Length: 598
Image 1: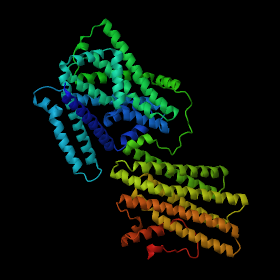
Image 2 (image 1 turned 135 degrees about the horizontal axis):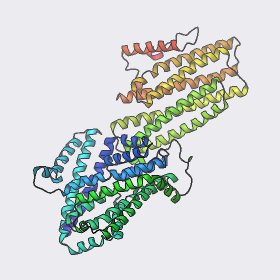
Image 3 (image 1 turned 180 degrees about the vertical axis):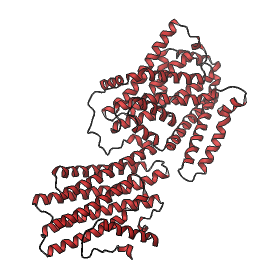
Image 4 (image 1 turned 90 degrees about the vertical axis):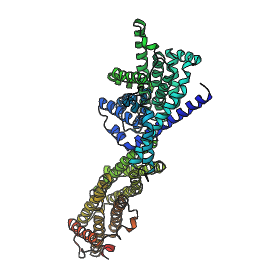
């Protein structure tokens, strides 16, 4: 092997790792966060968690990515440690798919079918199709994601073939043969596999490199087996590093991954070499093939999973003994999103959507409870509204900061639309929670000063509160379901609430003139009506943002001006129906629609 072969090997390794990275990212974007979202939710049974962990890892082609996500899930409180065990075991099984794909480079034969299966035959075709798809895609799309996957796979296979060709000259090198023989020592072999995997942070890649070196013919199964065992231990470094600075349970999840691979490796090696003492296995001296490496890799991971799955609770106990301390139940806020997910933009956006929905529901609940306090004061509910307002502030801070960081990543058009809607809406939801707190404080002021609404005023406020509750529920439902059609019904109700507020103000002035109400109550009522009106305005802002963004019309201010005559007529009809649904008697009950009437 001369210097040019060495350069070819380095270049092949670079292509191999780069192709694996491109393919993995393309697969992740293609999944659009859905696989990880399923992984997050459907882990109530350990067997389901195991199967899901295997399936997700097989698709995204990275057990390291899966285990890092699991650490993030546990750190965020999304997943329990007991649920994480099954996914970690499943990830080890799913990662073996990659080695079988890479074993295609070892196919030999002259038949048409075998020639077609050789990477040198189909990789150029895949690369050509991939680059055409990428270049013909104007923006982020599924077509581009498919192109990335095909091109990444082609580069991966080309790098694998380049490495195999470059090292083939080592077959007759005595020094290389002696070095490989030394690795037949289980301790040295394991150390070699663990160090290589820890450096490149991918067991799939390190197994692929081992498969490439099989082309030399100098790697026997006796050498390959300890290295493969060490590779399974080395892959734990990624999850251990990702657990730094996390909660106690997240650290334990990383330790479960380490113990699973460590115990599985030790049991396998002890049983294997004890068996070899009594029963000679001549295949250990024969040259390993790429397919043989893939077979051993799969056999070990599947056998280790079958062996240790019944003892998953003991792995948890062992991790708890290693990482002392209590689970930090209150350390992580409900609004927190783990920074580890930001490198997986599709899934990070799905998490942001979920958090935004939580914030929306929190705001709706805060508003509903504040109106209950207004109509019938309750100290516990009042304090609950204040707590929810503080949590809404946290949601806005966390989501805003996280989405700004995420905006620099490569995200799809659909995710970009979601990001725009969320960024604009969270400030409205936060302001709604502020108004809920202000209304609750007005109710407390009335309670402390022993002020009361007149029976007439209380009935009017109750009707207005029902309308405000309805617009909040309508807005939150449309926001959480991304239903822009449902969002079109928010604005007519917002106009009705404006009208109702005017009627209540007029009626209050009338009662004030007749001496049925005092001036102090008038100030409180003014504050309450202002709050209710502004809540409906924020609901309108959210709905219009959804409609304009999802309809690809980003000029929110032109939304009403672009109404057709038919749309104006429909709007007015719905307005009148809603006005009859929330009746408040007034001498001037027929109110106009402002700009829409012009």
